Image (cartoon, rainbow over all chains, first blue to last red; front, side, top):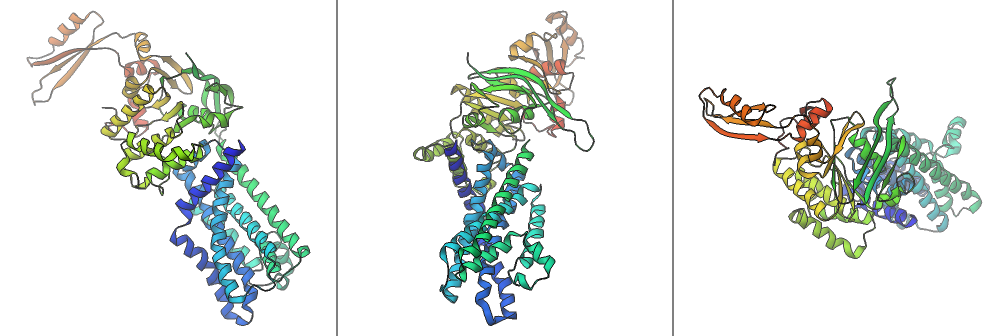
Length: 243
Length: 315
């Protein structure tokens, strides 16, 4: 059974990447959108561009993983294609994990391009590579799970897009991407602690400043918790639809 | 004879929404399907056909009752059942973005067909379903009949011994429907057991070894078409075709309760001098049986699906 699940996961991810993700509009959108936002802030204050890199990477992972992930399941449910997967010999968590894997692979591929460009411009001195790797992986998992949850929670594609943006845009401004958390009002700081992007940005900042594990561990742990909770909610919600 | 499907007291009740009472879609049905037969499941829209298929294929949980498929308990061994069952849903639901070939390969990947076999198997299925020329065409760009054929091919990709076909020819033109019926008949020759739901009584009559008629969640009849026919009260009809004044042939029918000769004589008395083109005796059709057993017009099934006049049932 485990072999069937793992095989199903792998091929669902591969199919999604081929059918939906690696298309020119997705690739360009995934890279250009975060760059445009960062550029807007860089123009305003060009003195410390390097400090914007963690936020840029976090945004790229967020939009790269969740943009298509948030609509792919609801789209397949509308066309009936999701039923094919439900009829296949694999368990529901494995089906959804396959969907997550597709979103994560695309998001991380796009992020890798942005990371290479950033490193070429700003250099890599003081980077803790292991924290960087874990931060990117756990961010991709959490954001992909967020996308999957949005996708199973609604019935129409436009609802998925609306809900995804309703969550992502406030998160973008409250998650410490552009403005340090410490400079925000107290209540907003508390609110920011409920957003996965906050921990993603902090973990990436720790990675680029050569931060110690003691500072990054909490952020990585929080991202892991978000991943598990959002994935479990997505599985539960999809299971309820099937009943 | 092996029983491939055994269903006992299978029930599905959907909870009522927005203050409506719960809906008893399938109401304690019992039936068995034998190995290698084409089993027809007939009924009007909302009778419980699709709810039954969804339960038997694991897409929906039964409220109560038991089912065994291929000797395996539906409640306990669903993943093993899924591995050996092919399902063709009512709507063709392959991936628009993938080519015909890639869709078949993906179906095989999901079901664990060994990598070495996939290409040859996909090519063979495309050949068999007359789709070789469309090998590299995206699913979205195929005609409706081709989409249907490819959906059936995908359900057969992992060589399942049991296939569920939900309204396979619905919405197809006469030629496509005829081709698909030929393919379904071919499955029986290969020993594949087929569970077929259809609105087309003529299709069921032509393809099925046995037929169950389901109305309002209950099976009201289950037998071979010949067996159902013998149970129907009306015996034979005489049909006479007469030339019309405007060149159009006109058909007249009478029951021959008091014998064929008497019926023919009655029809001859109604010719009004027109030429008799032909005289036939007709046995009760499955349509007659359906009407008698359900009290519904056979057209109800087509009208409810918005298909009346579609001309599909021919061929």
